[in-house]
Length: 380
Image 1: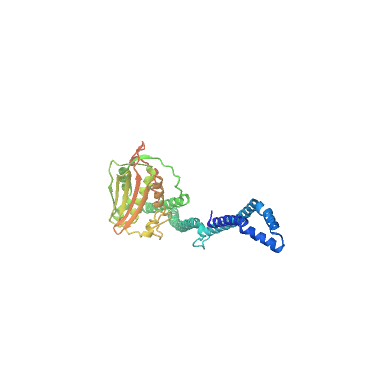
Image 2: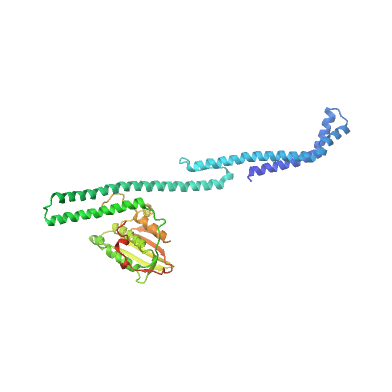
């Protein structure tokens, strides 16, 4: 019950008791005096009329007064309730109005005002994030479309050259075929990235949990990255206990580690080492990837795990991806009930993954037994 309604009820109750006292006391004297003065009645006759009309019907008069008071309270209550509903409706309209910065309601609706303003802040942030993600997605679609056309043009050009010049020397023919194959591989990579953009939905991804020998997995991954790292003089240093076993989906976690290592390789300085460490502590397996490279600004550090976000906004046909790698990594880690975060300073950037150690799953998997096509290393 609001303060206005409570005040009105108290006033009505007070009026009823006041009426009762008036009818019993001074009100009776006033009625008798009125009858004797205006109508020239005897005092006894005037008193008889007062008692017959008022005093003997006192309960009925009080009941009527109470009914009238209740009707007044009901009428005012309906009006106030209607005003509150109108106010709530206006607040809901303001919730969706971009021009309204702050929703203001009456003091009695303070709790609802707070909730509406909190909801408005959340909705505005979600809408802003969605617009930014959509804009990044549209930009990357344009970039990828351009980058797909570039290797495709080269493939067509070299194939036409080979077709029109069948008598080319074998050495030159082999060179052109090698270039064509490289362009075809690049085209395949871009198409895979384009496919990820249109099919990115890992929230309900199923997990096939097994016991992963983490040292073996990371060692094999470091070996597979050797051709990528060696031209820049980069290396991978492992500090992972041989007996460390991690319960998880080997294919999905391999993709997580691959994406982080790929990111570290792309943004580390030449002739530096990428440090990979792992340890089990307090029921969690903590894995860190440390690379020496440019410092990531704090504003960008908060966004690197978002879909379609790239640290370098410029296109790069050689290293530019769709901006899905770290976002996919976060989704997979979250599906494993873990967490992933990054910190960056002048000394380098550290990506940290924390996963539940958990009980053994009953199945054991070693990295060496996986077919290459199942590890997801070729996807961003």
